[in-house]
Image (cartoon, rainbow, N blue to C red; front, side, top):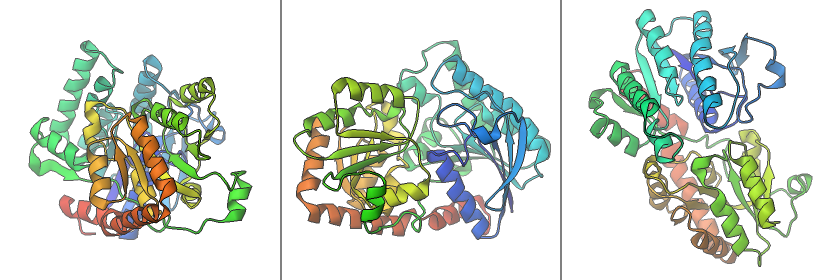
Length: 405
C-alpha cells in the first residue's frame, strides 16, 4: 500500500510528533509499504526556519528512502495571532506539496493543528482515497482547558470544525484508550471508524546502555552529581515549575536536573530558574533521539511532568516510553493515562500533578535505594519490549485498517 503522510512537524525537527511519525514510517517501510511525506520547512521548536532551508518556498528531498515534499510556512512559536498564522499558512501552502506527491492509497493527516484536516479532506476527496485523521491531542478541548483560548466565536468555530472533520474522515485514529473512549462516547464518532494508534518506542535505539565515563566527561557532567533527565518539549501544558520547586527542596543533595529540549515555555522556565537562584537545574538545547538514548545511560531516572487540568486524563506522554525502554525508572508528576501506564508496568513513582514535595521525596527515594531504582527500570524495559515496540503497535493498527502488514 502507498501511504501519504501530511504533517506540519517532521524530522530533522525534534519533538514527540516528529519522533513518533519517523518511527511509524520506518515500520511501514520495513513491512513493505510505500510512504511519501508532505510537511513544512523545518522550524520547530524555535519558530525559525532552519538555515539550510531559508529562502525556499518548496524543496523536495529524500529522508531514509522516503520522498519528502517541504513547503514554506509562517514560522512562529507561542500562542495568539502568530501561531494562528503559522497554522493557516501551512494549511494553504501544503496544497503545493500535495500537488507534487503521487496519489496514495491512504492519506494520513496528523493533528494538531486541527486546520490541516481541511486540507487533507479536500485533497483526499479529489483523489477519491480514504482520509485518515490522526488525533494526537484533543484540540480544541486541551487549549480551552489550559486557558489558552476563551469561550467565544473562535472556540465555537473550532468545535464545529472538529465535529465536521470527524464526520468527513473515513477513519479517526486515537493515541490512547482515553481518547478512543472520548471520541466514541463524547464526540459521537461511530465506533467502526475509530482506530487505535498509540505511541510506540524504538527498543533498539532506546535500550539499556552502560554509563560511559568518557561520554560523561565530554558533556562536562560532574561524576559526583546524579542526573535526573527531562527530555522533551518545554511547553505550558508540561508545568515544569514543579521541577524547579522540587529542585529547591533538594539543595541539600548533589542531584542535578538536566532539562533537554525546546518549546514555548523554555525561556520563561529558564528565567524562573535564575530568579530562584537554582544551581541544580541545567538546560540544554534539543538533541536528536540517538543522543538522548545515550544520555539516559548517565541518568538515575527520567522525569515527566504535566499541569493539573482535565485533559491530563487523556495524555499518555511520549516522553515516558524512551525512559522505560532505556531501563530507567520513571518519575511522573501527572495523572490519567500516563499514571496508569507507569503503574501497570511498575516502572516508576507517580505523584500528583504539581506535587513538588512528593516529587522531591520520590527523587530521594531513588537516590537512597539503587536496588529499587534498578528494579523499576528493569520492569519498564520488560513492559516496553512486550507491549510498546513499534512493530507491535503498527501491525495492530494495520490490522484494524484491514491492511496486510
